[in-house]
Length: 519
Ligand code: NGO
Image (tube, rainbow, N blue to C red):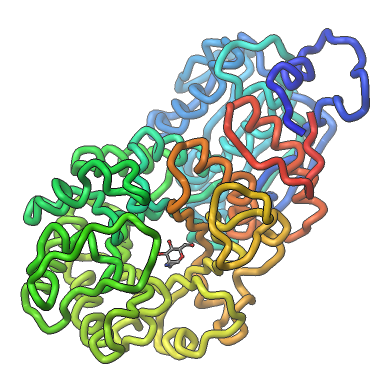
């Protein structure tokens, strides 16, 4: 069922007649109607009303969060919501209180208290205040997400929430190489994923079809590798300039999202070799590729120029990436012999550390001893992986992206037009019903940094396409990363209510038949 904005807004109007049918009733927002599920929720039966008199109280140190909160609430309410250091006596406030919120909350946790007289949000760090703001947004009626003023009663259910994440790494990945997505599209995706407290965005910036990030010392990577027509089926093309990348890093950081750049190697390098034929063993440029085959290209492991190229790329990427991780791919190196693969990884993994970053790669890197100080991203279909387990015993950390559960590019069911199906169909429940800490029987939960939901874009061109595949499954993966509890019936009910928020934001999403979409 497609919920229309008109139906949704009708639900939010206080003066409408009784709903015509039960299915048209507005989802009742309770203190627990939040995705991801908070650690503890105690409703007290009171209600806070956001009105034209409400102010946002914030010290200057939390100004960024206050600005984000105000800009989230102003469009639909039409209220001024001024930000001030101290609310005048008797004026209802949403107060942001950074610092000294208790060790249990860590950097990203928060305490939200909603009373009739006002709302108080406490956290140790601004990241925690921002997480709390996302919770508060979900406690208002869904019409709060509309872009223009709505006539509604803006109430928040009263009580207390204490919340902090299960895992420190909660990621999403977007493939910029198969089809390029513009900075504005990436920003729109960041806006949506940060609502679910996702805190890392991994950008897959190079593959066989295209190269999507400016590297000054190798300019043809983008002038050739990012030229028009360098997408799957010859559609699209484009690349991020350094200025655009830095702007994205800043935009993400203002939403407490850290960018993780990936250059895939030693395989998935056809676009680089088209631009620079010296990166092949015979020095002959291969033809450009716009099909979706994998596993046919390899850097030339025995040539010194390979390592000059790799080091230049790593150095330039590290210099514009404040986050801790730099992803060097390493998957599907079928065109590299196993011995060459080890030679390559033993030399390249330490280069990432040389430029001050933690090396991160697909789980194949676990075969190399140098991966003991790296992070390996598990993308397999199995419930054990001896090579990864052996690396973990020596120190490798793991991010879980099992392709048959966490891959957002896989079709929901056989009728899904977009997407691939090599890992199986992934309906919402399949995306939700697993535990990142225990899925791999030979990897202890203590080695798992968290989860990531990759979105490969062989079949995806527009933002609409991205949203349709990501939502609602990204919400499921985000809950696995954040929440300490796991309950399908509860998630299903909260997701059904959340649908009206995507409607209000005009976000395209899959109306899974597994969910009762309210509104
Ligand atoms: C695989 C492959 C990618 C594909 C993707 C499609 C990994 C890590 N390597 O995942 O090149 O785009 O599947 O689902």
